[in-house]
Length: 319
Image (cartoon, rainbow, N blue to C red; front, side, top):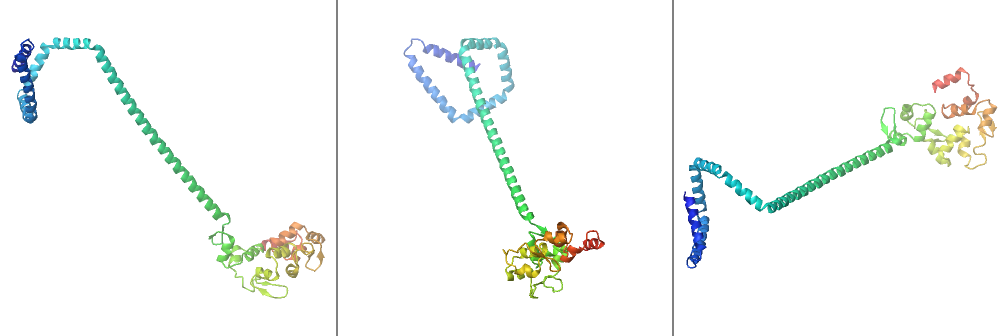
């Protein structure tokens, strides 16, 4: 009731001021401005007190207020609906334009947000793919380097009779203090790997201390060949393949017209070639070469022992 009375008085005052009474109108306007200013000041100063008062009033009369609002809505429902409908009809285009602008704004915001999320997702996916590519590339490079290093190690690697791995035959021979040429020569003569590595090279009874045709002894065949200015591989070729005597193999200069042509058998007979010597003994050249080079036979055995004798089989088994 109080609110209704205030509203009625306010309405009557405004109607009265809107008349042609010029004397009262300025005074009312001044009073209205002062009242509004005073209200603003009171609201600022007593804001908490006013809020507490309204809250206490609402809590004390909550059921009554809610009942009044329901009754008011029931009574004035048609009036309120009619008011809203009239307002909507009067401002239909403006409301539609506002709603359209609002929907467009929301649609643009959603589109921008979706594009930002998509770009962030694409960037994250791209970064993950790049990281995976880099990891795979690093893994391939590591495998390639490891494989290359392993191939470098295993390309010339070898092992001894105990299973120990070495980078090369030279390193294995150095480990056992054996000359590499001596080791290879021992294997060609049919020695086992253990014997070729373990038998000392300075043992005079093992046949490995090099002795020239004059009886001079050397620590190795390589040293003997160096003293005569002959390459050790050429020396082995002359003795093993061409059947030269140690004197000829050491003393015939490289490039002599007889070098690689004249060969001698165990009786001292000279031939123009090894093939000619083999033909004179009715021996196949390949058989002769295998006996001398791989089985370690003497020149006499390689030329004189027939292929179909038991001695040949025994000799092969012993080798």
